[in-house]
Image (cartoon, rainbow, N blue to C red; front, side, top):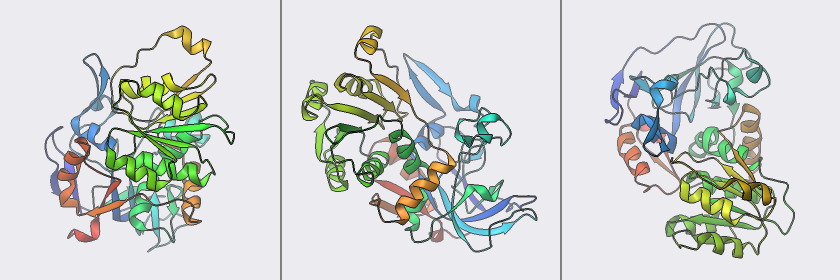
Length: 355
């Protein structure tokens, strides 16, 4: 099988040929046909997350030690199964849920693998989707995606459930409440689509890129805001007519955190999903005085993936713009993601790659 692996952090991924694994027990081997390239892959590729004030969290301390294969948005065809793999058939096309836990702790048993302290995430701790094949520990992590475009389907396992899970943490919204979506890349665009599917009409898209704001408008945002303005928080609050009930931040940097928390109404909630980096410093008394909520959200659980896939199957999600590229283009794609030059999503088309 063929893979593109991190051999050294910050250096180009290397093409590696190695033996295709043979599934045992409940394992399932999936031949990958599509695999999303996610912005969080850039941080893993770099080797660290920025914690602000010169502090870094190094991914090697999380178990990401080269050489390893990136990619946590695989979609493909069941190619082989272990003798105890039930409920799946050869040739079936499936989305792979990548946020796999130990399967034994109380968190995993409650269906929250993504919060497991002994995580086995694909493309992070275990070989991922920048490859011709991926080995899955159990069929339960495979989700049917019949009728969904394969390129879009690949992105549902990370960007869509990240947005879906984060949006689920917003307060209950009334007809006059407003929601701001900060960051209109792949995450923000699918987030706007989910809000629209839920019947939320008052959505303000926030970004610094005019092209991304235009895409957000097409996706269903009612209003847009260029956040480069020095008084962006005041403008955001005014656009929402003082009734900004929720903010979801898909960027995650100090400026966007200050924007989101600063524009909220009393009792509003700020949900942080983005991992751009930095340190957020905020006076404590106003948080209590304004009764605002600040909560983090990280990817999503298996049930949330099934729910967002169901929305897509019903045609209620407007597909995010997807550009298909070959696996050999992955280094160029990571560079463009890092530079903020990708509109929508880039998905690897493994059928363009000789295996």
